Image (cartoon, rainbow, N blue to C red):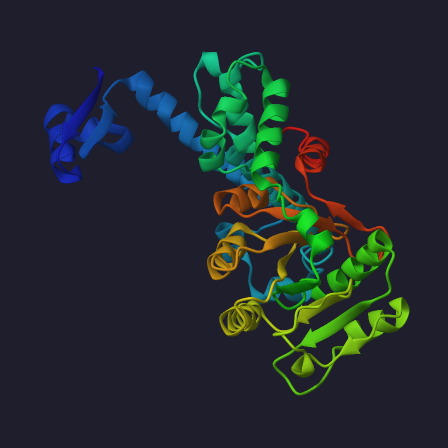
Length: 381
């Protein structure tokens, strides 16, 4: 009497081998497929058979207890019910405990989701990979923080030979160098600024913020808004509202002279309404029609954008190469996945800003400010 593992090319052949060896007394302990081969573990040992039956029964008992706790009737109890029993008895307590059962199921669901999240964060490694004093533990933590493996590998030189915390900060700094735009000084000197992006990404609000920022920096009130739209509805209500608050007029884009280069300190801010496709089309038209016209282009990217959106936007604006303005930072934070996607697409962040405040709300996105943001928001997993 023994336990044996039978291997065959298919289940039928494996079961024939079991029957030939043990006959009718055999019990199947497990079955699995390994590298294209079916493996069946079987036994005719009385003790093994008895132990296996107990384990099967324990599993059944657990199911019964679980169903009882959440008040799910078994098929057996359902079959014992008849119409007569309902006439002389009180209603089942299923309804009275419905709320409790619902709460219990909700707790179970939350715990399962938590367990799933923990398992998703797990990374299999050997013993040498679990010391936070060694540099090869850093990429594991960075992956758990959702930085893309492609970026981690590309910037691996930044954390090799350093402990976990030093390596993470060094990685943040190198990533910030890669992301920080050097076009911010150009914004200060530009007389024509094009702001475009998807609908709802904060274009008009950013236009107003930049107008306020440049007015303070240059000590000038000679700033004009131009609402570039593909509809006949006229100027956007949002831009008109900011125009009244700041005291800067909204002028008709159709009467702007792109052939004439302004010799004074006047600043023209073009708020390109509509979606990203209209913005890209309009900027390309102006570039092709007026090659000598100088301008600074800014793409609004709301914080919380996913990697697919960033990849799509980057592909559409690849010929324009605009400075990125991360908007709505007070509504949603910028995650590791977003930073990674921007770096992967060689995008450059020049401005970070929120939504609620106009005055003193524009921050230059340089190496130091981006590194500080990552240190404060990515505390490790």
